[in-house]
Structures are given as C-alpha cells and as structure tokens.
Image (tube, rainbow, N blue to C red):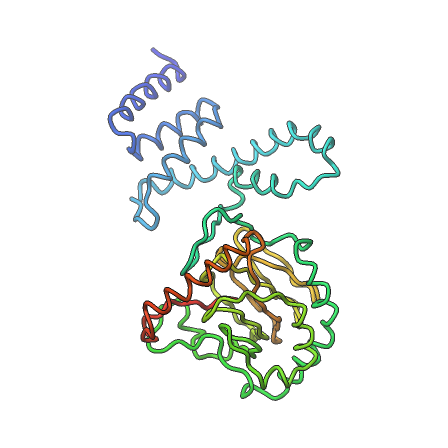
Length: 350
C-alpha cells in the first residue's frame, strides 16, 4: 500500500494533467495548492493559491464548498508573504548597512508591492493623460522652494481663514455643486457645505472680492507659480471639511498639473491618502501630490478641518509642452463649446 507521500504525488500528477487541458480550473488549482502545503512546500502552495484566487472574478459568487478552501488560501498566502519578507530582509541587511546614508524610500515601496502590502496605483486622469511623466504620489518637497514663503505666512493665512469661517456658511459654497442626479460617489456631498470652499481663483478666474477680503493670503499667493490652463486652472481656495465627513476616493482631470495643500486647521482624526501612502497632516507643512492618482481625505473629529489648496504645473513638463497642453485644452473646449452641465466631465478634486 502506498504511503501518504506517494498518494500526494500521484494525486498531484493527475491534477497537473488536468491543468494542462484547463489552466483556469479553479478547483484543480486549489487542490494542487493544498497538496503542496501538505508536502510542506509553503512557497509553491502560496503561488498556486494566488493563481487560483486570480481566476475568480471580482464580486463573483463563490460556491459554499469552496469557501473553506479560499479562507485557507488567504491564510497560506499571508504566511508565505511574511516568511518571504523575513527571508529577503536577511539578504538586504548588508546592503542596507552599506547604503545607510541613501534614501531607499522608492525601493521600499517596490518591496512592499512584491510582498502584497501595497497596491500599485497609477495616474487615471478623467480628462487628459500626459504619457511618460513620473507616477509620483507625494513629490519631494525640495523641488518646490516657493513653498517656504507660503508656509511662512501660515499664521496670517489662518487668521484670515478663521475670520471667514466666523461669518458662517453664507460666505462659503459647496465644493460639489453638480446639477441633476449624480452618481453614488458624490451624492452625499453634492450641494452640501459639509465640504465647502472659499475661492481665490477658480478654473482660471480670480475671485476679486475674496482676494480683497484676505489681503495677507493674497500676498502669500504671490509666491505661488500657478498652473495656467484656460478654463481649468489655476485654482486657489480654502477647502473646509466639516466634522465626521469623508471625501471618497477619486481622481483629478489632468496629470500635467499637480495639487498643493497647506494645512491650516487640523484637529486630531484627520487624514489624507494618495495611492498607497497615507500622511498625517501637520499645520504649516505643505505638500505636493498628483491628484490623478486615486486619493481621499477624511475628518473623523468633532471640529472642521481646513487647508489652503493651489494647483501648479508638473515640474517634469517643458515650457513647450505646457504651451501645447494649453492649446490642446482650449482646442478641445472650443470644439465642444458649451456642453450641458449634465454631461460635462467631472473635474472636481481635493
């Protein structure tokens, strides 16, 4: 009588023959993975389980008899990722010591994707995509020396913000103000001052009275190198998020521009995510990000959260490219003319 090991090998050979005829046979893949696990081969079992799970369409119903196998698959995959992380870090120990003075942040993100601890996010603009620009979630602050002057004015800007907020909701406007029925993503925030704005510039047009009302903010904005996209940018505003309010994951319209936030009023419980990176807000510490990468914001506190937002050109564009992108944007707008609001592309973003 064959021992257990022989039975495993015989069944494995039979199942591998099944896969030759049907490489997407989920049941065979799950059983093969289980046999590799029984044989003590964690790495191969995990790879087989992962292949099996990838064959199940997202949201598809799973037969009840497969549920325990899928739960086992996820547990084995997680155990294997942890084992591989330990294995790899031993290999990296000497190299990390050798390069201790160098930034390895980009490598560490790559490692995190290999270990399935971080999703891969790419720009997905709703309007214009400029190929071959780096897909950077948060940009290196050193590339934007003008932020120093903006940050230096944080106290003055905040004082003017507080005066605006003290006048109540009548002086701000809902950031989302879409006509008619909107999709479920924005339904809760549409026409709502739970997410409101006090504009200084909006889609290329200055709000003169608001600039006069906040002269120190207007003066600080003189350091800002705006993105000049006719009909689309620049935009500069106070963005106010009311207590217990979340801005859902979304993307912006054009990766030729970037978005800058200067946090002004940040109670505990507020956060911001771009792609796979979540950052804590720090009052007076500005950052620049690509809003065409999926991002979201939340205020889980009992107080309003407020930031100053401005947009800028992507620094990887040449002057010639900027001018051509402007001409392209104007050309598309002129071609379509005055589209009805109900079918205009959504270009809202924080």
